[in-house]
Length: 99
Image 1 (cartoon, helix red, strand yellow):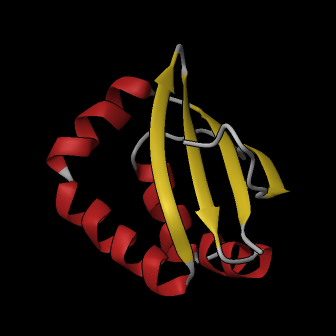
Image 2: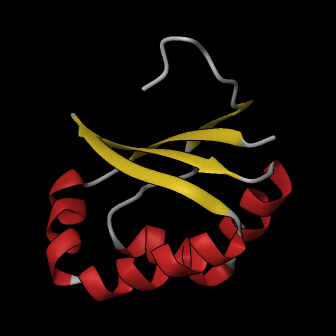
């Protein structure tokens, strides 16, 4: 049974947007590491002064182990995140209207 992870990070969205291009190889590296650690799906969204992540993971434990990496935390801070994110973790369920 997988879990959905939704995180909201306050911070410098211009710096984040620039990092998507300027540091693309690092994102690719982290994406591959996430998949290897149990990540199933990943997406970003940008709002006014915040970035949202929407992920699906094999388990809470897999996500927590991956996200607690000091190297990942340093990367997140270096791309514009300020402070601890708001996080929601919930069991993923199938529904008839899913797409």
